[in-house]
Image (cartoon, rainbow, N blue to C red; front, side):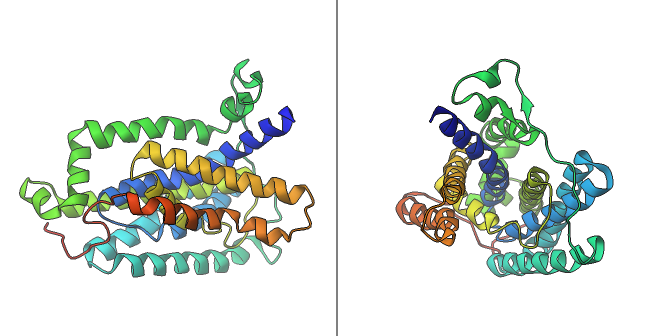
Length: 305
């Protein structure tokens, strides 16, 4: 029983890591007033960029490939939403569909008709000496991949940047009342470009983490994680630590559905696959009403500079 609980906790953290990376980036983007529905597309692009990079040069190049692919999606999103002031929701949706289509088209061209049956390198767990042997939580906390440890460092760093620096104050001001921020000398457009690029860069890394964890690539393997990450941001009340804890909740739901399937239940496995998405609807219904989003979130008609 103890081993089963330890395995569940380990899977929870591993599953939550890409969700938390994407949600952390989306938190920054939404703090600037941009809701980036294209995050799902950035994750999908990151998956493809990572598998191409990893097949060519190993894990490090895979991570760089995922990061670069996410940034490319962010450049397109920022050019349209900030530069041309298009609707944020429609633009993000179009970019997500474009990412699905592009990766689905390029995959057989790059890897052949059999897809990525090739074996690419994966992120190996890094065990902390002795600490990984702690009962129950040892492997969950101290035997994860480098991306989990990176996330643990990024959460407090992002919080410090947002709430303890002048740049973070300017960024939050843009998300609350852009005209006032512009009057104070803040370049609103530039800040929103930055927020979008940070968000999609972390989205690309989230996709790379997915690919480099399972060691393969399939079409649409992002499986709605970008949309779940947007829900996580609301549940976490637009704070980095809130997003991280909310991601753990969804990671636990995903890990639980895998264990239910492995247990050989008579219930159709599709019911278990739906568990994280049902949880998304429940938490939004229960907790969404009590959260206060940045006042300018979703608006593209208030750019003052």
